[in-house]
Image (cartoon, rainbow, N blue to C red; front, side, top):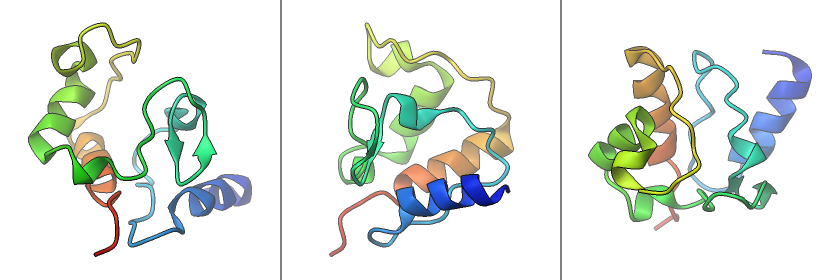
Length: 99
C-alpha cells in the first residue's frame, strides 16, 4: 500500500473501533460518493455507522447488486471476487458506534 493511500485509509478508519480497509479490495473510490467519519463525498449515504442499521446479508446483497436493495441507486455493480466481497463486508460491519 502506498504511503498516500495508507494515510487516506487511516484517516477513514481511525475513529472508533474500525478495522483497516482490506488490502485485497481494489480502490473502488468509495470516498468519491460516501463519507466515513467526516471524510469523503456526499452523493451517497454516509457510511460512518452503516453496521448499526444494515445486516451482513443486506450489505453482501447490496455489493452484488445495488439495485436489489436500493432501487434507483446510482451505485454501480463492482466486480468483486468472493474474498474481496468478504473483506469489504467485514470492513462495513466494523463501521458502527462504540458502545
